[in-house]
Image 1 (spheres, rainbow, N blue to C red):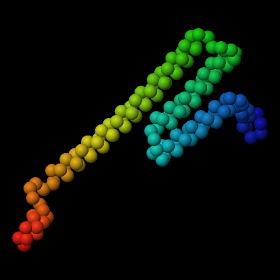
Image 2 (tube, rainbow, N blue to C red):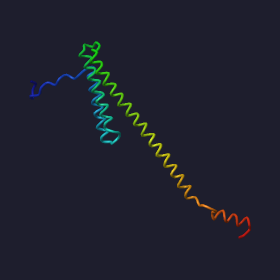
Image 3 (cartoon, rainbow, N blue to C red):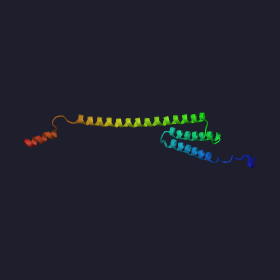
Length: 141
């Protein structure tokens, strides 16, 4: 044990582990900034963080396999996870499209309602301006 009763710290990670840790730290910092700024859903930052974790776990599985190809059950499990993630991405994209269509329909409805209000507020019959013009033409004034 070194002087002062402190233990030696483990050596810093190297290679892809160091890169993954750096990415995770960066994502965690961004998530904290998002929470403070109130910009965007926190679930998106969490999804990015979990994606980084998934990549690290997949790399660990490949390393555990000795750098060679993964066995078929492990490969199927990874593929199933990716398919589930892509389905989630596609569902989110569909939801965004539906939201945009809804907003466009609301805008169109409001424009039509405004046009109908203007049509209803238009005076019926002869307006005072028209009556004045008629009287002038007929020289009744």
